[in-house]
Length: 257
Image (cartoon, rainbow, N blue to C red):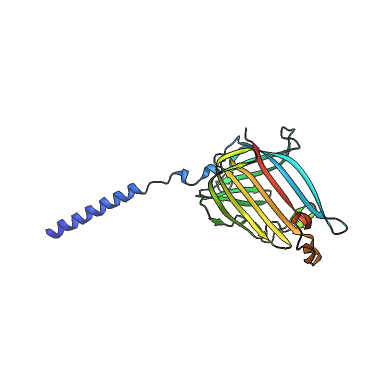
């Protein structure tokens, strides 16, 4: 009889523990993931000022710079499910020489977001721009979907654009002023930061809470010495002096109507 009472008491205790455990393990609040830094909804519009310098080499083997400023307006026009049942957001991008237009269609891109990753598809290139939950110092392979050694054509020259890229969150929830606008909570993502005499790969993006991408800066450069097989002439030169291929771009959010 005593054994029966003991057994029943033990069973009751286990049931109570299980019940308590079930109460503790409630579903996590979505706010801890940081999805607000990567908002996706139909009708969202963002306008960027783009300052770009592209480099190539003239007939005499010396670098030539071509500078331009223009404006890009992105608008999420629709959402749809792909063949895997994932919700995709179609973004039309318009270009203008002036911040107020007129606007001409430039291209179309797609963004999506899973529980743990934020994606962007540009042409046939897919990137993992952010990972969730957002944490300072976390690293990931944002170019996991790209072919290794992929080369792109920039201003008529072929360059290994994504060489030595390694995504990492540098800071979270920092207040920053970007352009003329102050933001209270910003996440900074470093996508690349490598530099030697003949190559430079630098890329950084900033995301503001409730807005999304507010700034992108890239310096993807090869020196003209790389293709001449002689590094000495490039050792003491700045990248604007020795860049033979590639680009420097800065995209700054200027309007969110």
